[in-house]
Length: 243
Image 1 (cartoon, helix red, strand yellow):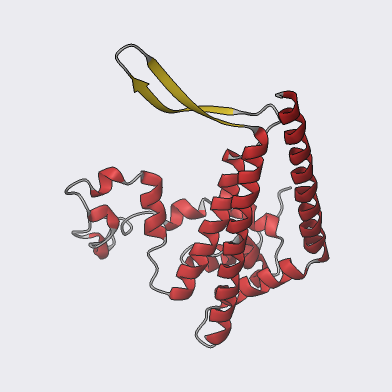
Image 2 (cartoon, rainbow, N blue to C red):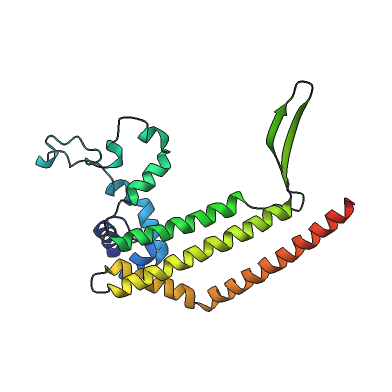
């Protein structure tokens, strides 16, 4: 016998529509006092994004008369002339459309999400597999009358790791400043802020105040310190072998 359909299933999608799709499953779960896994499951099974983004009015609706669908005038999709859209990757154009929000608080939140995505992407592309992980790139070439020469730039594992740690540290500092700015802005405009924007602050606060999160931060710092010491030691060992 199949389980009865939860009344929160339809309510969850209505909340999703109310916030124009800009709300997380966790936030919906908090509003409905529902399990977050259920929200994720309903979001996937009921194809919320496809239903919400479906272009045009329903068949037979008078609003469909003369409506060809597509993006509104002024949207980035309307730029058809010149090299503007040709030079911008599709993924970037999609992000630009999603960021086209007049609310400054929402724009700041999008910046936070984008910065966090950059950090994750950076960790993936700059990951150092082992101490033998080296990169050799052609820097420049010279062609004389009797001689041809090439100059290469070699990055050893410790160089890559040092660059990653330095870049990651700066990126995390930027993210922390954005989060602080977001919290300050919402608190300063509390009466004007939406429930979604207020819930985000509570979510950030719960995450930061969570003992497990604090412990993980300390562990990550210690791992980073030990990794740095290990690579510095290995660097000295390898350099001594070359003498």
